[in-house]
Length: 193
Image (cartoon, rainbow, N blue to C red; front, top):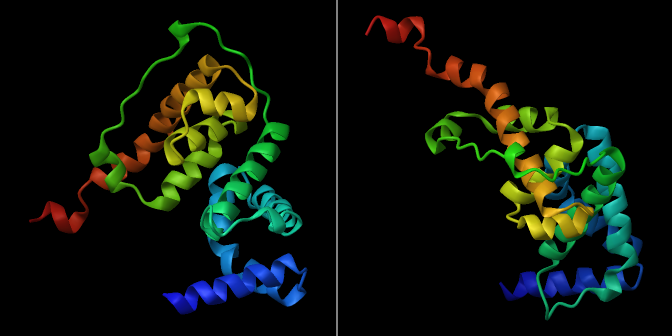
């Protein structure tokens, strides 16, 4: 464990010194996980790639602000990536203010249903949501932000955040219904048993 901490410190110090080799190592080390984060937030691979490039640029520009005593490097980079996705998503999305509580419905999706889905099915369905709705869904469900925090981050009201989450759940239920039905259907081999 101490060896990893020393390597991590060496990598961080190299990046702080603008060492291109250290920056390349850091990029390669964190790229796969950060790409997954960006793909979850954005509709296309191109937008995800744009967010990751923007995010890593911010990481390298602000490396001197990173304090090893205050947190873990991966978490710090992930926060920057999520914020890059929010910034890009905000440009892509048009948030309509929703003030009526009547339009907000809480839709429950059985955990057993989610267990049957493959990650690709979920990601594909989430990416089909409107940009604003997808962004709120990810911030709320995946990252656990409150509606107040989401509102502050994307400059919308809490009720608008709630509406987008409700809308995401409605749309996902409709989109995933055929996938769930196909999972529940017995195959020819299973019918004969």
